[in-house]
Every structure is written in C-alpha cells, then in structure tokens.
Amino acid sequence: MHVPDGFLNAPVSVATGAVAAAAVAVSLRGARRELAGAAAHHGAERTAPLAGLVAAFVFAVQMLNFPVGAGTSGHLMGGALAAILVGPYTGVLALSVVLLMQALLFADGGLTALGTNITLIGVVTVVASYAVFRALVRVLPRRRGSVTAAAFVSALLSVPAAAAVFTGLYALGGTAEVPLGKVLTAMLGVHTLIGVGEALITTATVGAVLAVRPDLVYAARGLARPLVLRSGPVATPGAGPVPQAATTSTTTSTTTSTTTSGTTSGTDGPAEAPAPATRPASARKVWAGGLAATLLCAGVVSFYASGAPDGLERVAGEYGISTEEEEHGLAGSPLADYGIASIADERLSGGLAGVIGAGTTLAAGTGVLVVASRRRNARATAGAAAAPAADGGAGRAESDTGRTPAGNA
Image (tube, rainbow, N blue to C red; front, side, top):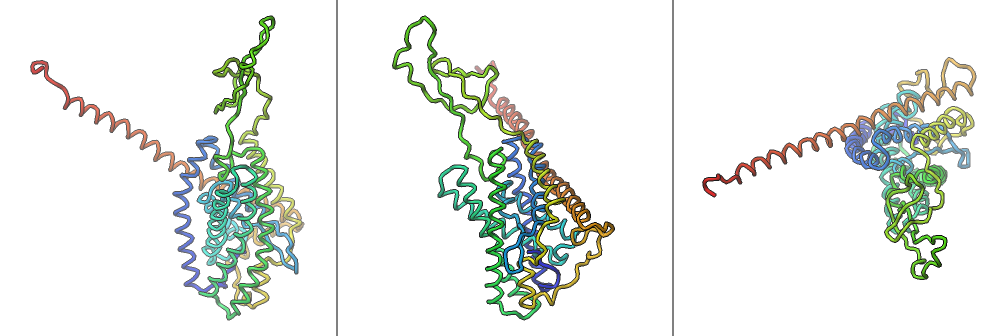
C-alpha cells in the first residue's frame, strides 16, 4: 500500500508529513529505551545491527508480492513483525527507513506522499498491531505459543486498519470524486485477504526466531523459564542404602545455565549431572542467518513475485482514483521499479537491485539505530559519572558541618 503522488491534496499531505515527523521524533526517544533494554539481554554492541537487519528483511520481503485472487496481489507491510521483534518505537524507525529507501532509490511511493506512507505503513500498522498483540498476551497463557498466536492475529488486523485510515484520509483530501462507501468496502475486503498473507509471514518469522533465540524477540522477554536443576544425595559404594527421606529430589531454580565442571552443587548435597542442553545459537549466527535470508529474498525469490497490481492499485484503478496519479519525481533513477536500467537481463537486473536495496537499508537502518543507542548510552554514562561526584560533595559537606572541635568535646 504505497500511496503515489497525486492521490491526496497538499493540506492532507502536509498534515500526514507532520504526523510522520512527530512519530519519528517520539520513536527516536522510545527506541533508545528499547535498545537499552535489549542491550541488558544480549550486549549493547549487538542491538542496533539486529534491529537494522529487521529493516533490511522487511524491505526484502516487501518485494515478494503474493497473489490474493481476482488479479490482485499483496505484500508484507511489516508493522507487526517489526514491533514484535524489536519493539514498537524501534519498529517505527525501521519501517521509516525502509519507506525512505524505497521512495528515493526505487521510485516506490510518492515523494510528496512519503509522510502519508510513513503514517500508514510505519505508524498505523505498528500501533494497531502492537495494541492488539499486548491485549492478547495479557489474557493468553504465558508461553511461546501465545506469542505466535498473538502475532498472527495482530498482523492480520493491522493491514485492514491501515486501509481504513487511508480511506479516511481520502475522504478528507482525495483528489477525485469517488463513492467513499464503496471504496472503503473494497479496501477492507482486499486488504483483509492481504492481511492473511501478512499474518502467515509474520508468524513464520517470529516463530523461527523464537525457536533459536527467544531472548532476541522484544515481545517475548520475560517468558523464558529459569533453568531447573534437581539435586539430591548421591549414594557412595559400600556406604549402604540411601535413606528413603533423602532420596526425594528437590527442585532448585538458578539463573546460571552451565558450570565449568558440568555439575552443580545444591544446598541439599551434590547435584546430579544435568541432562545435556542444546546451546542457543549466538546472536552473530542469528544475524548471519537473517542476512542470508534477506539477500535470498531480495536477490532471488523476488524474481518470482506476482506482477498483478496490489490492493491499493486495484481499488484505485477500479474507482478512478488512479486517474489523478502523478509521475514520481525520481522515475528516471537508475534503480527505479526495482531494476537496473543498464542491465538487459531482467532476472539479473532485479536481483542486483534487490541486493543493493537490502544492503542500503541495512546500512541506513543500523546507522540510525546506532546513533539512537549511543545517545542513550552517553546520557546514562554522564548521569552515572555525575552521581558519585554529587554524592561525594554532599558527603564532604556533611562531614564538615558535623565535625566537633576536640576542645568542645
């Protein structure tokens, strides 16, 4: 649902631009908190690259239009996926970077409509999906299956929510006279079908990350159970049978997962050796796997994407909205329409363009989030440094005022 130039008049375009700018500003502050919280789980130096990878992955999967019937296709919006994986504020920033790269490099989504697209795809889908997601996980059992179930429902509903908001914006500033009731019905119908595809992609991706590193999923924090060790006395050869009362094993929860010797001592005696546990994949391996999947989608699978018009294009063509579409200001750019103009081979042209776009989005998204996380870390460091100095000064003042001369004792 990339809105082109010309669909909305100037006042509405300016208003959505202001909404988008405000949302990005608020998200910069919120993303610092989310990234700082993620750093407490798996290291500050890894949080921004992982979030940047989410932006690149959304860019790549958005190239994969899938058919939804009646000569119509749809593609991932990514609001629910980004919000669940990296948090709602970071998700808004990631999607904003994606939309900016698409508009500037590939002439996808209008320049004057950039604020509208960020509002619809980067804000509405994130807010709607995350609100539904949080409401569901509060009533569902606290387990991983609840995360994927909530992800499915929230992703499904986020797409028609964005379609409804677009129709509302068109009612305020549409450039063509159209039957708004019919447009709303058509937009909700086709985008509900697209929402099913969105839900499947989101659930599959979230489930894959949960399977290897649930701690990397923002929305799954706090669902991991502590390691349970069962400890009890160990029978010594020749020492006779172990008393029945002592054979009852006790369950001890601990926050540590391994020891150097492979066994752990509990308060009730030497512990039994725990069963071998599968070591979770490192964040670096998860990042590498995600990057490989991103490049595969952008460089190879994108060639097989559906060429049918997406939901907005179909409805706009059916009801005469597309007659007001204006040519993109960067329509002649080297990567316009997700291809390299100088390469005749369509497969190679599209594949290279997709890889370039994914790489650029990864670099831009990581850069934005690194800046956000470093500003947060710098403020935290400055505050920590100022606190001891203030405490020391107060301590000296208190000592000076409380000192009693020896002659007066």
